[in-house]
Image (cartoon, rainbow over all chains, first blue to last red; front, side):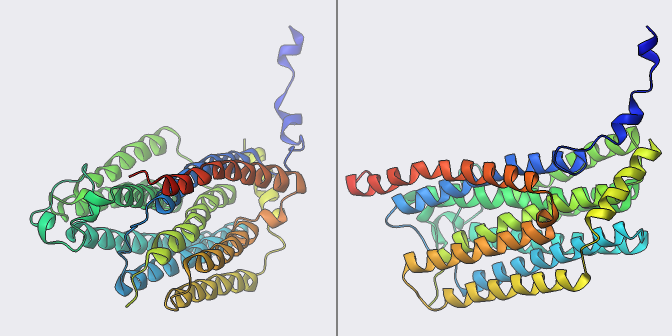
Amino acid sequence: MADATLPHEIPALYEPSLFGTYSKKIGMWLFLLSDSLTFGALLYAYSYGRISTPNWPTPFHSESIVNATIMTAFLLTSSLTMVLAVRAAVQGDAKAQQLWLLATMACGLGFVILHGREWSKLIAEGLTLPVFPQMPGSETTGEFANVAKTVPQFPATFFGLTGMHMLHVTLGVVYLGVVALRRKFIPILLVLWLAAWLGTPSYSPFHHAAHVLLLAAIVCSIVLWLKPKVYDSSDVEVAGLYWHFVDLVWMFIFPLVYLMSAKIL
Amino acid sequence: MEAFQQAIAERVAEQHRHHGKSQFFLVWAALLVMTAIEVYLTYQNLQPVRMLTILMGLSLIKAALIIGYFMHMKYEISRMKWLTMCSLVACLALMMIFFPDAFRIISLGVK
C-alpha cells in the first residue's frame, strides 16, 4: 500500500520521449498521417477517373486559373504568417503571436471566399451534384449542363476533393481563432455563421454547409468553458502543423485538378 | 502542472533555436516562384504526360520544403523523420496498385 503514495509524476516529466519531442506534437503528426491517407485516396480517385475516362472535361478557363493561383498565394502566405506566429510564441511575444495568427486566419478566410466564388460559378454553369439543391435555370443553359450527365465522375471527384479541403481550411480557421482569441472568438464565429447562412441563396450548397460553423461554435464553446486554459507555444506549434498540412495538400490539388484541366485558348 | 508546461515550452524553444526569420521568407519566395512556374507551363500547352511529370516534380519539391522547414521536420530526430515519412510514402505507394486497372478499363472499352 505504501507504493501507492509514491510520487509517480515527477520522474515521468523528465522521461525522454521516444521521438525526441512532446506527446501533443506526436499526436498531431499521427492525425496528419491518417488525414493524408484520406486526401491521398481522394486524389487517387480523381486521377483514376481521369485516366479511365477518355472525354474528361477541361472546365477551367483562364479566369479560373488566375482565381486558383491567387488562392494558392493566399495559402502560401498564410503558412509564412503561421511560422511567424510560432516564432513569436516561442519568443514569448504574445501580441505578435496573436497578430500573426489573425493574419493567418485572414488569408485562410480569403482562400475560402475565393473558393466558394469558384464553386458558385461552376454550379451556375451547370456543373453540379445530385445532392446539391437545384439552381433555377442552370440545368439547361449552363456551359457544363451536360458534363454532370455524361461524365459524372468529374463533379463527384472534383467537389469531393475540393470540398473536403475547403472543410479542412474552414476548421483550421476556427482552430486558429480559438488559439488566438479563446472565448472572444465564439461571438465572431456565430456572426460568421449568420453571414454565411443568411448571405447565401437557399439553392446554394453553402447555405446549408454554413451550419458547420454553428456546430464548430457549439463544440468550441463546450471545450473553452469546460477546460479553459492559456494556449502556450506548444499549442501554437501544434495548430501550425495542422495549418501547414492543409497548405501542403493544396500543393497537389492545384496542379492535378486545376492546371491539368485548364482550357487555355 | 506548471512545471510540466514549462518543460514543454523550454523544449519547443530549444527545437526552434535554429530558425532565422530570413529562412522562412526564402522558403516562402521559393514556393511562390515554383507556383508561378507551374502556372506559366499551363499556358505553354505541353503534352499532358510531360506536363504531369513536371508539375508532380515541382509539387514534391514544394511538399518537401513545407514539411522540412514550415512543419519543422528537418530539425526532428532521425527516428521521427524516418518512421513518419516512410510509413506515409509506403501507404500512398500502395494505393498506386489501382492505376493499371484504370488503363485496363480504357483498353477494354468499358463505358
